[in-house]
Length: 257
Length: 56
Image (cartoon, rainbow over all chains, first blue to last red; front, side, top):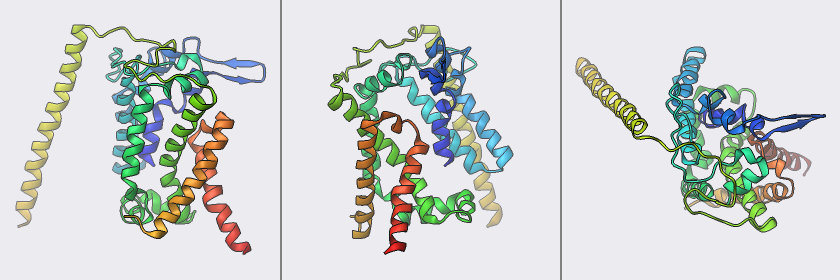
């Protein structure tokens, strides 16, 4: 569950304002949806690695659960990092407001929910999703009841607490629901876009090019060097921590023998 | 290879998925929320079969 919440967290409270909603006589929509969604000022910080760390630490402190903290962090980082794949990208290293972007598929959130969906399911983004769906299908064993009971239920006290309120059949459905939703949604939007409405496919880099995509400015050489330095520092810290962890674990083992 | 029971369960989810997809293509708002999908699954895969088992 925390992994799922983490993966939804960046867009959870904001995407409706990007697309806009109509309530009574009011139209509520961001005047600059791209800036609001991925930029600063705006809520673009929700797509940063630091945001995931802060929320994860809150989970650890408030709920006292390292499992929830780490799982949420993995989910949120996965969303933030994969959103660098489009033409706007994310401020991964916020408060540094540079947008890391690879431009593989068109960002079209500013065009509204329907055109955005038509574009996403016509371009490389849809192919990217399909890769994960196929991976999920090949990993069907993780969706079985036995796997859930043996590995998932036992790994997080949340499931046991939830089981006091609802039967395990309901928990199993909740566990499977994310894969069900993602796969069915992919199929439904693809059918809607290409069978019902005949939007053309364009899986070339940066596509589909028939939509007006939003773009972040290209990264400059100093920015690329800065990104490289941050990643290098992160790898060095992780490697050093692993060495220290290894030393402490070995000392602990030796003290017991 | 999956067991017969696992294939039966999978077939149930595939059938539920087909209905979900049909509704979603017709009314795309249905596709917007994970929570709607969860509620749909709970009704179609748990509540309805449980109710039918109790009746019959």
